[in-house]
Length: 297
Ligand SMILES: Cc1cc2nc3c(=O)[nH]c(=O)nc-3n(C[C@H](O)[C@H](O)[C@H](O)COP(=O)(O)O)c2cc1C
Image (cartoon, rainbow, N blue to C red; front, side, top):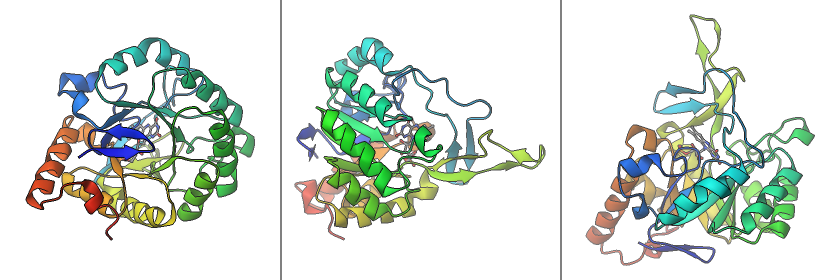
């Protein structure tokens, strides 16, 4: 079951996705989280962020919308108070980093360089203040610039997490690889919205919010398939994975590992079911190594 993502060995391909697993502590009440292939931290920013006002999450058919607004305690707090506990868990720790400017990202990376995190996942879905708030992950050229600068500063293996709202997801992935990404993860949430018909107002103060969960799986799977065919770095697939079958589909589409997000809210130990399910499937199908089925489509 073990997989290697840019030189880092994961005991299995199942990773808890950023923003849906905190720093792992709460889930440890439900199961032994060291069974996971890796844990991705809540999205960190250089300075603490309080997040958005108003409603932050709302359920949709087969999914959810969120407008958390990257609430997090900041990189320094993470390093000082959270990382030590996370390192006690026998799994790979991936720090997810967001930022509103290239300088923010670089300052965050420089602080994380000198820690025990195993990898860094760069979230380029954040609004870029210099481009009038448009996310770094929409235009390939803007993404190239931030990834290029971050790569120069980064001493850890660098995963770049793509937004499905990118103008052209394949071109975006290729540009990020050209800029130095060691791995690509996709997808982040899709831009959606909801309206409260009794209040006659949008549910979210920001009007739009991020859609995740089973509703997005077929689109995420198609994007992972297309990107896997186009790049030469390991791809981490996510978007709506909630069963071992979903995970196997992503692996067959070309993913080296998968992340599980929203499904953790439905069943806190779902990752364990997915890990066990993959193992049983491999036994049943006489698969000795996941590379036998990776990218076979
Ligand atoms: C409540 C919530 C918070 C999230 N926060 C982050 C975050 O801080 N950084 C990030 O890169 N992605 C964040 N995401 C996106 C997820 O990591 C994941 O990319 C997305 O939800 C799609 O996967 P899923 O359908 O399995 O949830 C968040 C998602 C949710 C639902």
